[in-house]
Image (spheres, rainbow, N blue to C red):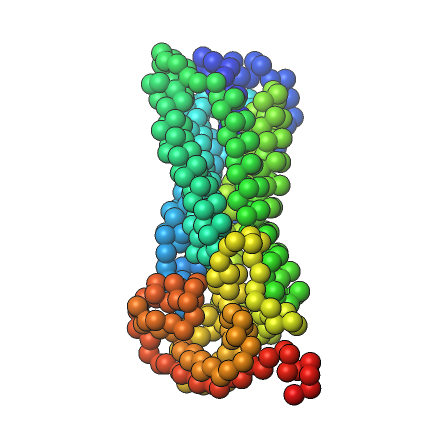
Length: 418
């Protein structure tokens, strides 16, 4: 997207007249326009990302009552994404999508102002999406290794975001020199900055979206459900593909003689990079809605292996709570919904008991399962479940308690025929 500044780098005065002189003008192409393409991408992307963030907020506020920092950051990122769409739309109004000799000279300055705005909101929105994803990981995965990795990534990414927020508005000093070549000032090497930021974004995407894979692979879930989890969390790799394609568009735009026309791809791929990142981050959070609509596909009924072993983690020394937190999320979502029926809790009882530490092969246990818990309630599950319940908000209108007597017999007795 940033290479659209090629127009500015021609140091035109008046800008569009010199730009037209540098282009092989063909007036038979005057009626060609890519504005409809730009508008379609902006509208569809904005609607889908807004819908995803809206469903995410509904799930966290109304269904789970656990609206957190990751959700707040994502809302801000979505607002900036809408701002990016508006800025790119204004660019198309003032020339983007037309051949470079078509727009009148007076449209050049408002075009560059719109471009300047799109640079800032796009880059900050991209960073905030990544920060939201990392905060989301910290809520889902509770093992110590994952917590430390996400904290390190958050520190690096937050520092990078603050640096961009200061650097980008000051690419030119004074700022007006960015869109007005008659203003005396100095500007940084734009193209170098664009390539550097694109490379950093791509590397960050690969690292962030790779973090959950080892944890998910270690969970003892049915294959279909594990594949679904990998698919949902792996959607972020589409963002990596888009980031790579966007770098190619920057290279093409840097060599074009018709920047208003050829820079459309850089603009639209940049916008798609943000919106796809938002969709990838929001889909895992709206899973409770899918569980409600398609329970046979998304419900979890068995969490342990045939041997009854406790859930594994990818790190030998890590606490198993991280695996239990993710694996029990389906039942946790179901239990938090107020209900007068115990039928929907039956499978969750079995699943959650099998998710516990079964090192004591004999004895009887009493398990209490409630449809949600007030803030500060001491849950029977020590770990991720207890943490999530303490974050609950609002009031529980209906509570269902189920008590079961469950006997575990030693494997040695089974083998001896007792």
